[in-house]
Amino acid sequence: MFKRILIANRGEIALRIIRACREMGVETVVVFSEADRGAAYLDLADEAICIGPPRSAESYLKIDRIISACEVGGAEAVHPGFGFLSENAHFADVCRSCDYEFIGPSSEAMALVGDKNSAREIAQKVGVPRVPGSDGLIESDGDALKFANHVGFPVLIKATAGGGGRGMRIAKDAEQLKTAIQQAVQEAQLSFGNGKVYLEKFIENPRHVEVQIIADHHGNIVHLWERDCSLQRRHQKLIEESPAPNLKQSTRQAMCEAATRLTRESGYTNAGTVEFLVDKEENFYFIEMNARIQVEHPVTELVTGIDLIKAQIRVAAGEELPFKQSEVCQHGWAIECRINAEDPDHHFRPCPGTIEKLIIPGGFGVRFDSHVYAGYTVSPTYDSMIGKLLVHQPTRPEAIACMRRCLNELKIKGIKTSAPLQLKILESNDFQNGLVDTSWIERNFMK
Image (tube, rainbow, N blue to C red; front, side, top):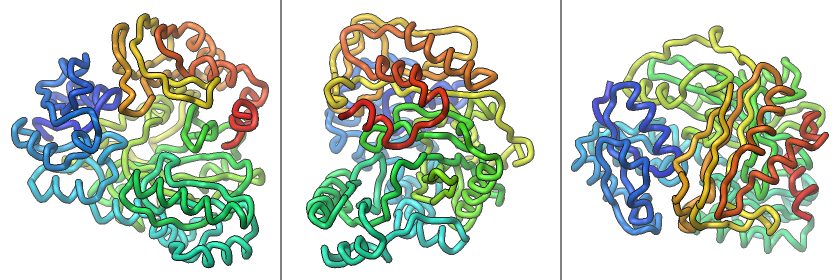
């Protein structure tokens, strides 16, 4: 086991990793930018090292500064968290070439599944259903129009690199197609340094269901069942739950087995997430694989009882998974609300500022993963998520009732948050009956 790990991230996920390491007897070094100087979680690490000014490009994305922090801090391994450099194969390569283990997959596997086009090819090889897509990357507007006319509009333009809804656009007709491609290319180039895109048939009103996997270096691959992440705005998730409601057990099993086949074929190790779209007939289609821990990983932790961060670290240290597939079951029901510093009444406009008052919900089966506190100033520089409110109860109705109570109990003064909207969603008949899809929020709250 490692003696000291560097955390190449910030905020809630950095604190989450610090806590897991402390319980494992592993020391931590956390890096921070000038914008995060004075953050409370820095005091919980064994060492904190400033790596630059607020802009991510000059701090959290500076590979040379992170490697220097590893050397100064005496780290043996690097945990990238999610976002920033977590899916950067070059970063993983640099870490390992400098004798710092990267807590994630190999750079080869990361590049393979991280590129959506090559990941689709793997899915096809092992018989995992895919959304009908273009034959490779789009090289010209003419190629795009030919594909769109073949499968029929609407079509979805997707960046081959990255994730989080960036580099994605929908074109409903030929007139929109050229502009949508230009916008997707520009956004992908800015976000990921890779402006290449491909096209998929747009499946209207699907559910978004993803499968959590964990694989060690001894050939063991285990899925930890599925999460429903359908409630999204602008392709970014707001509420997640596990198990997925109204999903046949046969569909659930087939999806998890498909995720395992794809993981094995790609030579993937450590934690990853295989994402699918599910239509109204419960046909499911592979869309991408995220080569990192997900924001919503605690949902899976609650229903399986498995600490995914600890599992990541143990796998990276060369240990064998301590559980078999037959031993991993879903117990009860978990729901997560991402609490974002943004104004849902004004197109989810970011709302940075100082938190003047904070009351955190509690009680049986309640968890709040957050690094913020009363007096904390939310920076405009980074993602707007300030915490994750989770509940775990024996049944879905009980989980919904508990989350509604918690959202009412949560008090954040000084900034606007997504919590009031999430309360409205949980009170809706559609959510309570499990009848939401990926465009439900847009249809009901973003007109």
